[in-house]
Amino acid sequence: MNEVRHVLVLPDRDTAEEVAGELPDRFGVTEEPQLVRDALAGEDDAEDAQWLVVVEDPSARLAPAALDAFAAEYEGWLEAP
Image (cartoon, rainbow, N blue to C red):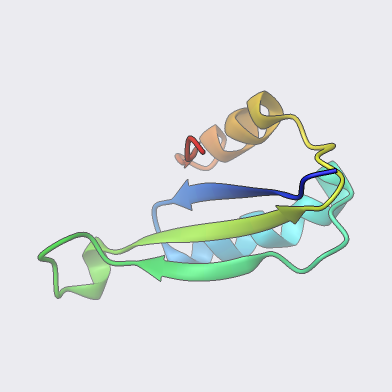
């Protein structure tokens, strides 16, 4: 089975940390999600950075639509693969 990686895009670090903390409760994620700062092209100001929450899904059991809806609750979205 192919491992799937989901990337949630969120507006700031605090939101990304909150989402990462909710993933185990909401979706049963067992691997620690990775938080990655994604500076927008040409932007030096940290305030303009988006944050990514990278979720490894080794058994491809997480529903992308559910993750997208979850991210939307935090003004984010699921990045298309």
